[in-house]
Image (tube, rainbow, N blue to C red; front, side):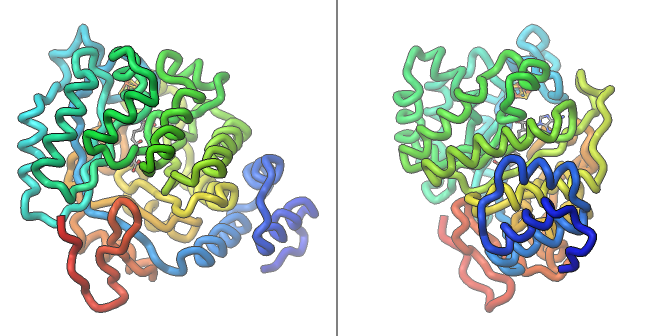
Amino acid sequence: MNQQGLLPELRKVGEKILSKERLSEEDGLLLFEQASLPYVGVLANLVRERLHGDITYFNRNFHIEPTNVCVFSCKFCSYSRLYAHREEGWELTADQMMDIVRSYDGKPVTEVHIVGGVHPKMNLSFFTDLVRQIKAHRPGLHIKGFTPVELDYMIRKAKLSIEEGMKLFHEAGLDSLPGGGAEIFHPEIRKQICDDKVDADGWLRIHEVAHELGMHSNATMLYGHIEKYWHRIDHMKRLRDLQDRTGGFNTFIPLKFRNSNNEMSHVAESSAIEDMKMYAVARLFMDNFPHLKAYWPMLGRENAQLTLSFGVNDIDGTIDDTTKIYSMAGSEEQNPAMNTEELVALIQQVKRVPVERDTLYRVVRDYDKEPVEVLPS
Ligand code: V47
Ligand code: SF4
């Protein structure tokens, strides 16, 4: 790599990456503030290829969004409706959600992703029953569901400790937690964009307890709005510290803020260049996260392809148009749906190797080798 003309501090950061040394918070901030896109890109790609070669994971999943009625009022949310206006939203019954699950009978999906608003009447026993019903119907389907925002509300309302509540979900059959609800941890920003929901320590504690119970989880960060670079580093540092203690996170997913139909529509969205820098710095700073995911319905297909050169090794799943979170916030994908062939082609077009995975990154099918049996479910 040509490091001529580089700031000596940036050169040192590059040397740390080459010698597999951990980056400090100052190093991460320096990359955001001073490094060129090619510089962070080359380093992030080096780490990506060191860890995964050309392998790019995707999975076959579907989403269930039980409701968009929510007791909270996050300023960036384009999707929720207050309980007082619930006639404008949707509330699925357990039977309707089971109908969605049954509609995938015989189809080779490996995961259901369940996330929605925080409905005051959908309580802990409603959702633990739902999880039990899904498991009874299809034991091999991995259930990834509920953010700490939903869990904290349900568990507190049931007057249980976090440990007791999470144990009930685990025993019901919840396999892992998705990454949502993290937003930006620092209170300076959290106060302005999502004041009333679970705070950073509460979010981190629920993931920690999940990890202690043997569950895995993902982590996200909502970036590109009113936060500064140092807030992003602070957020990633808190996740990196927890991962050092538990090792329970699979994936880090930076989520690009979209500004349609919400109370933050006056805030400009980040450019593609900023997005690629975000992924690259995340790959370099989050050295104990095995995977970095770009969620294609939010970024759009072409930008998702680009991220594969900036540290990303996973582009989520086929999802079949079953999520509304991003289409309502103005993402490129108004009706996100991609079948397996399209996802495979998307990855191959940028000369990477598609590998279908399950939620825990076990290989279901490696497109570089002979086709293999799809895992039984
Ligand atoms: O927490 C809401 C985000 C998240 C907007 O774990 C917005 O595999 C951008 O976490 N602009 C929920 N983002 C979705 C989520 C997720 C998605 C895909 C995969 C996984 C996983 C997790 O969506 C929320 C919030 O951060 N969000 N509104 C918006 N206007
Ligand atoms: Fe509710 Fe989640 Fe929307 Fe916040 S982001 S208002 S918690 S649905």
